[in-house]
Image 1 (cartoon, helix red, strand yellow):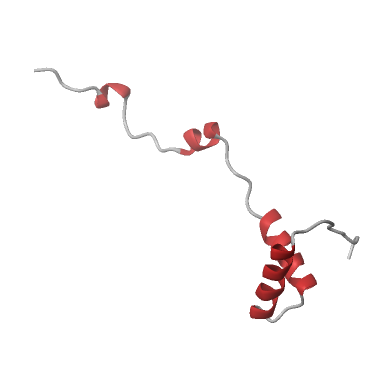
Image 2 (image 1 turned 90 degrees about the vertical axis):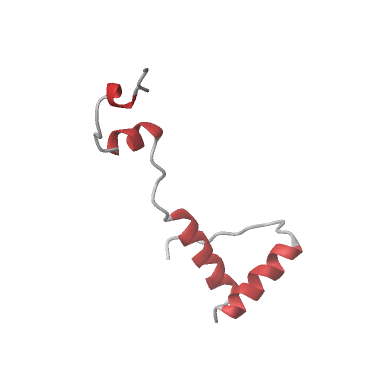
Length: 70
């Protein structure tokens, strides 16, 4: 392990929830804390709006979507 992490002033309800969750998962509170941090921080990065737009397939021209006037 690279380093230690100390978290101070954690609300008692949070600590209780952590211990309960750890027990349900068969882990120590410390191991549960590591797992929570890992899953929260290893998530894929959110894509920007521009990246989402650029990934959209070309489905036609703008004129294809103009309402027809009769």
